[in-house]
Image (cartoon, rainbow, N blue to C red):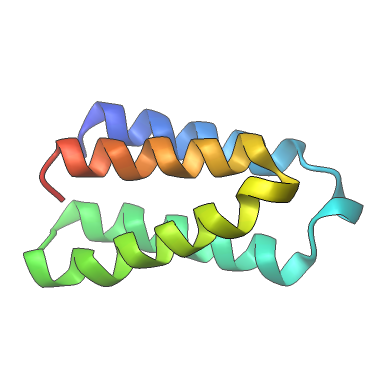
Length: 88
């Protein structure tokens, strides 16, 4: 896995861990963690078709988090940018 992408994934995980449990509903947090796990799994053996839905899901997550949790929204956007730079 591209080291830059791996660092963004780890940073996003860390930001999620620091969020106050009351400020983020468990379903949203779980959805994002599943998405990150999917990303990690797909980057092990990627195909072009697998990435489009994943990047679209990341974009939706970024939009949802930007208002209430800007640090998480920013981290998701940075991950999207790293994926784009890697051609994913």
